[in-house]
Length: 482
Ligand code: SIN
Image (cartoon, rainbow, N blue to C red; front, side, top):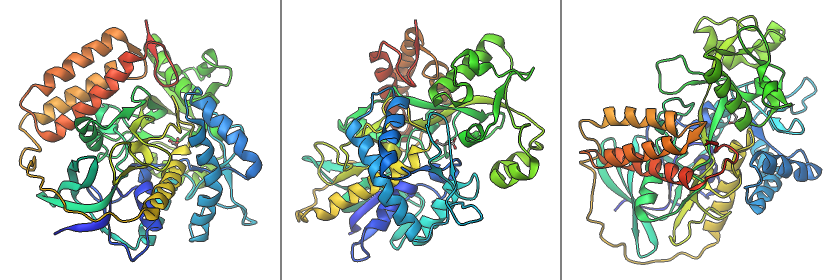
């Protein structure tokens, strides 16, 4: 029998950092749906927040709470900030190289809604890629790719493992503890910055099992994304660009964001995204990110990844400006957990990283708190797990299997329809009418001949729409027009 001490679903920063905390003596399996670098961590650009020192904790907490419209769980935010001192030191001590100045001091950058520069980065604008590579190299446990989880094996309030296809073959994987680190819900939206693997399957399973999703109305849209590409994942232009001084302009070069907020480009992410969306909607004109204030060699060195990626599309920086749109970026809500990643009512099941809703982000996540969230709550969940006494017992028989009905013929068409309605009606600016239309469409699709994976996406989409309908007033990234 395929039985492990710990099964970790997901090989992004949360999953890998959890694996690093577990001793070699434990039988641990990390699984990912596709290749390991197809995860949101890999595509993270700007950096990772760290409190600068003890004195900065209160300010970091306040910035996080203000960005989250004070809808945050303050205890979780304090844990996030305080623990960052330990986790950042640990990652550096293990050998991770963040960018430094010529004297060997860490370089900190600033992003929207941070009061001070406290974001560390690597490879200029390739922080996620560097961190992911580093953690992959550090990981001493078995990592199994091409493993698509389609069911959680739960009976009488205990999780015993999962059912998954491994290289397309349905199988059961049993474990004493399962850690969900599967990321968010990007594939539900027509425009998104996420890896194609991030498709809300595990959220959908949770809905089916009666596990609570919380704060699902708070979906975060990144303001500056290049969406004119045929690929599902749209190209992020990091917040750090604006943090370093890039401007958002109209075709005449006017910085129109000051019409929306006196902080202009450095207002909170929800405000900037809404401003750009509204400007484009009202005027029918493009909005651009303008880099003309930067010196060429400095820009190339500070943003090598963006220089290269956009260079391949014909853009030359700093002279060329890029047309931008907001796009879905991050799920502030998720599978409800406490600050140890425990899921109420299910023993042996944890959730960490973007998949989780600890309340740390409130109604809108502060820029670059996400990589930090991954490591902090991975550390706490694994500490909790290791401190427990082991429960022996018989594994029940789980006969029900969906392995041969994961996909059905028309799923692709319905998925496209879902992505469009989520973008149009459950996006940056919502109306009650649009939300009701989305609800009906999702309901209709659920009653079609569809595969299990689409059904799971629809479960998650329903949770978002229902939460958005339930919140009548705008708050943070949930904005409803009457
Ligand atoms: C970015 O680099 O703009 C993304 C950072 C984040 O999502 O916090």
